[in-house]
Image (cartoon, rainbow, N blue to C red; front, top):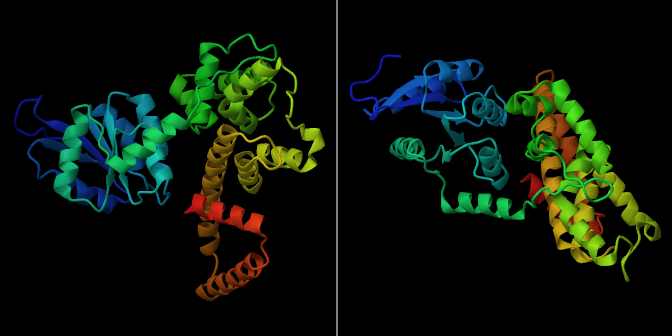
Amino acid sequence: MEPKQGSNQDIIRVLVADSTHIHTQLLADALKRDPKLDVLGAHSTDLIPTAIHHNMDVAVVSSNLDEDPLRGFEVLRKLRAAAPKIRTIVLLDSSKREVILAAFQAGAKGVFSRYESLETLCQCVRQVHAGQIWANSQQMSYAVEALAATPTVRAVDANGLSLLSKRELEVVRSLAEGLTNREIAERLGLSQHTIKNYLFRVFDKLGVSSRMELLCLTLTQPNEQARENVSGGTAGAGKRNDADNPDLAWHKKAAEEGMPDAQIALAQIYSQGKQAEKDPVAAYAWYLVSEQTMAEMKDLISNSKRKLAESLSTEEILEAQKAAAARLKKSVKPASHDSKDVVATAKHVLA
């Protein structure tokens, strides 16, 4: 990469990776018009080694890479682990809340909509390079609300005394961010086998048996612990027992096993206080869990649907669409009031 004229302090080295090779080249050429930006394009597969080799200052990465709408976030997490000094900006096709939060969780210092001007993007690059966060007021409110709604992890063992070790807490916090074992291993500089061993030890200490149970515990444990302190570790007066309410027990079990409809229903139960003691914190926690579960299901469905569509003709796809529309119309009509609430909430989460 030929350096531009000027002092090293004036020039900002920018790496660009857009959704396709053509888009990457077009965006890089456009940014090169700014005399203070030294720009280089890269493919997703060689983005990290290129960024490190050329000692880049800022990386502008599309959320959509390799025809995967969320691939950019995975690349950002890896880049942050490999070169934490490089500041990153995410190019977004969507301004939905979950996309904005995913960008910040991946380590982005700026979120930029494609519908804004090139001049604004150059300004964004300069501001992020200067150590500032680039986001509008609505995007920042999403991040602040999410931060305020995330309880501090205060996991304890069965005796309620011993805290998890520092490394175990790092693993739990990474898990809460949605990272896989491989990504956690890369972040902490450990092997995947070591991460699995840490998780097994955490499971034993906390009395849980799955990642979902662990996530639920870290979200709701402070509130549950407070209740136990008030009641002396036993059921307090007026507190309902799961054994007395099999419907609630079923929803809890199904929700912990990852069923999104059960997670939403459980959130509504805690929110309304009809079948269980009213608990807004637990309700909000289960809404967060259901949101993540449904986002993962949506990605899985989209990828599976796209692969299957490659083997179908246009006529077959149209036939499937008509059959789905008819089935959806038939299934929505007889919905009860409660189930309509669940469907409406699910549509809102997936929107």
